[in-house]
Length: 451
Image (tube, rainbow, N blue to C red):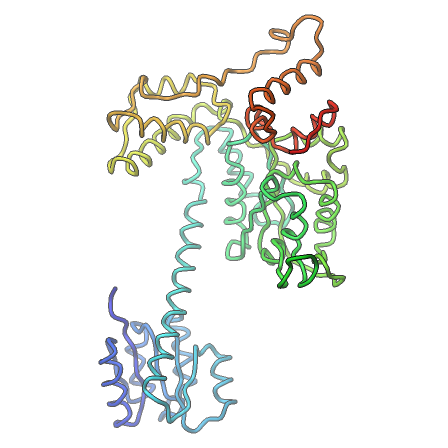
């Protein structure tokens, strides 16, 4: 790690010399200036600025103002023997990182500088992460050359600047998460929080406290007050993934958030207001869930302000070569230290598959194939597809004569339970359903849905 450079601005020669010796022995590179005017040529290269408040001609407050313009990321620590706490408070209001009242110990000075540099490092890291996220969710990093995806990108550009609710619809694995983040990072809220809530991952009995928070003592084990996901996202964006699996009791509270942007923590009567944009995603037919009484009609229409249908990989097969090249290159570097290669035969095999798991399945297949392949070049024989997954034929081709669709569905569910030895979660995975969706079907069949 390179040494940090500290700019010391002090008009008293003796103190400036003492500071030079102390900070040099602590491992810092130094620039020294006897006045504010003399410091201007050093400000833009400083990692930290240490300045006296009382200086000839240009005082420390003016130096602080110049620093905020010329080198805004550099923390400024002010020293004063003449000021009061009010002077220090004013300096902090104008952007100073900390202050020192003379006389001070050199150990205290070093501690203040180290603390200020640590805070700067955290801010720089946070800024770099945000910039990386922004680059990641630019369109050139969401691979989609097909007309379907180009239309999606154009829609994102139109809807991102608003605060309107967006409902992302599409099969599992099509990239709804990436699209949601792209909407956020192309919006005016890009510098604010993006909070993803996986509605299927939160147990029903914990969902209210996770989403809306709770007060200390609200329930057994609530030893502290904890803000919920919506509070954490204030001024930013909330992404409700798999919104179709939200329990009915929580749907009522979500409706209030959508309508009024207000809620109450568990165990509190205080109404809290938040400024959030809401994005939601589903891989189930919400209209069908509405008709079955599993989803509130008023919530559906609140969510469906800007519907956006993400095409399956089967509907944009022309993107497969570009996606495959990206994943082969990525996983080749990760597993073998060199970019992977894909033969024409290998690509032909990928193009001929129906991809029920969409882009996520394509990514997994290529990663698995490269790990098992003897070389970094994938041939057709090296592509490890899920042969148990077949395209779904039309109902008239496979429904036994005299058997209704409902009866056939129930027989499939019972077979999945048999294969899973009664394990509901495993059966749901076999069927490609969420646990809540399987519970609903079991209740309809009169079968015990409890785990």
